[in-house]
Length: 193
Image: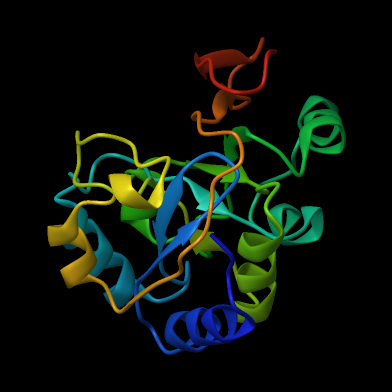
């Protein structure tokens, strides 16, 4: 399924204006909004029926964008970013709490960031200019959508725009918690650590 340039432009416009968009990544379809729009974040949690105490992953388009949100990342974090980004590795690190609205970090002190290996997702994030939320596009606890046909029609009705396309890996990201020493794998996914 080919993504039209007009779909990318529309996704950037909707996200920039505080909307919610479903979009393909390398792992699965994500549902996102700007990280810095609290109203949009509240609406996204409501739409997904996700408890506000459960942190949500965030996607970036560059290491620089990630470093602005991570709080003094260790050498290990930087090595993981250099080795596996762009790619299917979500890295959890203490964050700059002033830049990250409380529900995104599950009321905690950490943020899980990932740089997807998907040109269209990267182009959208870059176009918006700030990280976007990146949970899978499903209702909380629902089936992860790896194909466009997996998306729940009810969910599609609740968002502002849907970018068609394909996910390349069709498996979840690996999640590694680098806020503890030694680091801990929270979820084993596409990246084998």
